[in-house]
Length: 308
Length: 294
Image (tube, rainbow over all chains, first blue to last red; front, side):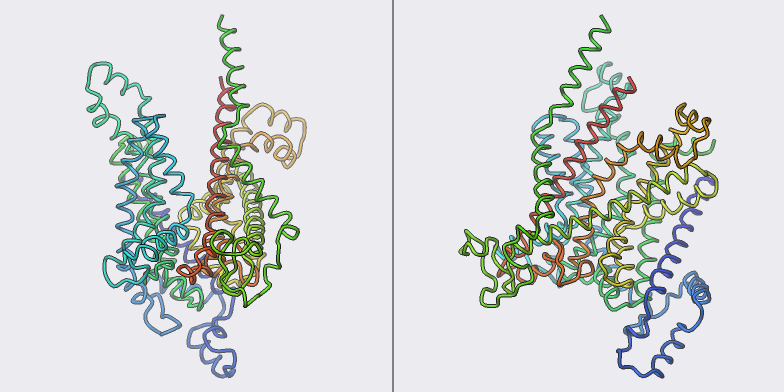
């Protein structure tokens, strides 16, 4: 267990280190932030002062070392736009994004898993076909198409729900739904195949052959075992939600991390972009580690196998 | 007796394999239609897609009060929507096709390198693959893109990074398995250069699996391209793509929903069609590899 946890920690560290280097190299080498922040008619003196103030004069290697040191000390620098601390700028957007991503994750799970289970237990019936057709439609329709479709129906034509903004919970209804549908569709597909896989196992046949009621077979044998591969997919959902939030926040003018990222990319606010990249990487690493631990708890075989 | 049932079964399965489901035919037809539109965009487009006609701004499509001049209506500058749609389809397909090819090419090479050298090189390549798989691609692409600039070549190269790790994993796994088989060893014993062994002997044997991954990657790349263009960070005006049409159409959602609807419909149907084709190919492949094994 200890070796397993340590190897996971090492991989997590490598991922974070790669994100830091990736962000640094991609963002720092490709343009001159001084010219971008200051207007093009800035005097050479002003540009030089800006450069030395932001440490842009040193060699790339020195800049990187200083950056990496600062990152691991929790010091992410200041936004180049308003000079505020990156940690503060990013942190104040986190609850705003969580307010739509967490309910969306709930939608993923509450719709996706039951739909997949029902489809698998009614394999090749019209119900299965309808559910799976819905799932295919759910993950092939891009979120901006779905989002604007919903705006058109519920805001423009019916006038029931606001098309954007973040004043109250009612503003969150359309973003949460738009964000949740795609993931629910993917989860339904995976759950269905996981349940179908378990249904072919001999212990399911044995249980029903010895007279256990079908309901009990499903509850005690099928669902717990089908949960194991499904948990892995929920880890994937987190990445899906993070990427989806960027688009969905832009559709509905929801002032979260996604909007901040797009705005910072447009204005080339390097420090904020790097801060967000790091936050996303941390989120992904934590989500993957949580999935691995959950996986180990649900299926003790994986832990003992890795020990050997 | 058993030989008879086996041959009957194999004949039945062959017949089943040849019968293409209706849905798959429709999906193929849709993709073929798009390919024709993309190839003959210049001939098919009724107007120049950049031609501005301010007297005909926001004209509705035919059947919704519009005229036959502009079948799909016009946008906020009076540009013909049908022509814009045709050129957008060409742009989106060219980008997705190019990026898919780039990803498959480099991903497969890296996979073969990992399988050939093993050791440190393999570990480095697999670590990079893990990293790529762990980060949401849209976030990575978004940050690189705005800083590198918006040239079309860079945009295609960047999207080529999408999903390379899948080809790498598949190619590595299959190449390691294939190396262990007799034919690769035999060719190597005859003195063939490793490059020849991979390109002439191993690659043809693993190509079908890689092609299926490409059909899965294609709509994904199209969606990422549209998403980035929708955010205003992908294809830049005056060039147009399906995503940027949606991005500009959003401001006129209430007054002129057709600006947004036509490209939205095309993207959704294309993603749907390619995913149906991908599923069909995978089923076909599973069945044929299954029959090999038995």
